[in-house]
Length: 485
Ligand code: PLP
Image 1 (tube, helix red, strand yellow):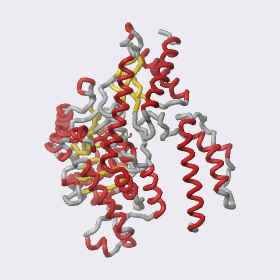
Image 2 (cartoon, protein in one colour; image 1 turned 180 degrees about the vertical axis):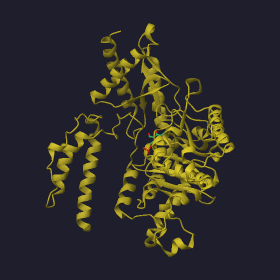
Image 3 (tube, protein in one colour; image 1 turned 90 degrees about the vertical axis):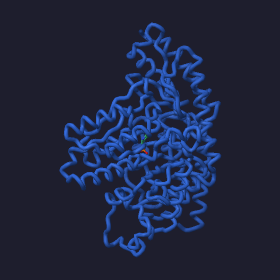
Image 4 (cartoon, helix red, strand yellow; image 1 turned 45 degrees about the vertical axis):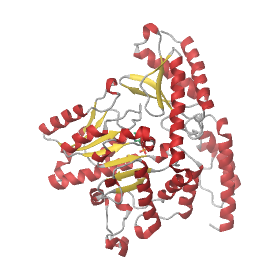
């Protein structure tokens, strides 16, 4: 870390990355390498002597970049986007540059206090009720992923109930979700020792837009209570992964309160959209939730990784996750007047992620962040209109955010033949992705296979959406020509 070398080498790397962005459209979006491609390209053992940065960058160019799937390509329409921005990158650089380990207030007071501040800023942008803020009883914490946020809240809910009912009751605890809830919940349940068979993935259907019905939830809870189970935790979603469905937060919250469940809202993707007044209504009723999380690393111009988790009352989280070894004891902690964020998460060591999010918010401002969300939604709406104009295709579900779910129809007489639909759409998707010119993914909801076009990569413009649509149409023509009915 000699300052002159540090500065010169860092500039070389930044120029290298800038070139990468200049050329990003030239790379196949989905990496075309085969499994095991990398090993033969490098020695089996680590170098004994230092190597030059130039040699390393040359190897990255020759061997690493071909093995990248280009998430920042404007032609990336797969999964949900992982937004990057110059501000996000600069924030990440600062975070990495200081490289402080922010597990307690004492280990970097600025890191702790900025995290509290930035989480309050975010909470205000999302119009979360005051109990989620540091001025209320609660507050926010930055995690790396939603999965982590869910594990922590599950552990807090579990321990609260087991303290009352005894540890043996763990086999009786039940977790509720819909069949559209992200798989992080299943993983979290396993990690906190609740039997995976105690997760009720309640059915959703097309007429309700694949959102969880409070009646279905209440019926399931009553049945479980009758059978001697203990209802523990409900995960509602605002913007499901497969199709962008939204659970009715307020109505579910009332059921959760009635039966004393911990209510978590996962808004990993769509939470960012709720900074716009026209989307905020999806969070109505959030005051009934115990915890709420969303990922700025998806749609908030914040480079990986960054997940915001708010709780109305951190006590159970802290009770579940805190440890007090002598070697970490310090006067500040002993005053009980400071936050030690290690007690709000799994790991001890933690990055100064708040700095990145703070830089993103300051460099863009709320107005630009809203503009960013709205432009993506507009592009998605444009794509949807293109699909709707071609009678060979159909939009499968009404769009709420910037995810368009569509498919190629099998033909007039065969429109209901799901097997055939699936075969054609798989071929179409394969054709698009293998071309290297765009990347999308699929989902199956309500037994229907469809293609997901998730608009939202930072560099995507109208011309990319038009290019994608032309590519889809060309591939569809070929698929339909070669189809065997
Ligand atoms: N929840 C939802 C609704 C998601 O869409 C995703 C990822 O796409 C996740 C959770 C997982 O987020 P993470 O990778 O931060 O754990």
